[in-house]
Figure: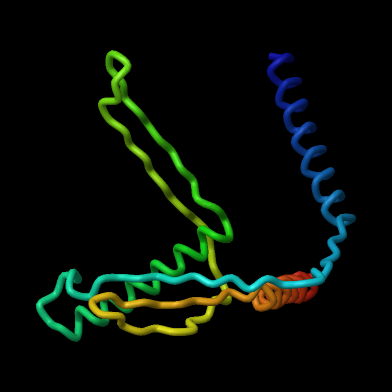
Length: 155
């Protein structure tokens, strides 16, 4: 029974020490933002076929293609900012390739992009986006200032 009580006290003490250390450490951490010397601007183009959209209404097909081309452009921006993850699989038998699979994915959050142009070209709708990292920087600073103000309010 004494070992069981000793173990409880030891676990409680260890958890209090770790919680205490982390809160003391957090109070002394200071972050400083440094403004970069230059900000790149990247461009992405997304396209979508109009006639292949799943609707019988011509106007709705156009609107769906507009939206699809915008999403495709955002995916291209995310690919440029975060990169693209690729995974592949090849099956061979008797040193002859039987089957090959390649999967590509991209994941990220894009803030501050602006639609520069959106227009039809034949049966394809095209959307052009620009992402100015100066705007991204301003959004980042704005979000951090709001966090600092909230933290100051509560203390």
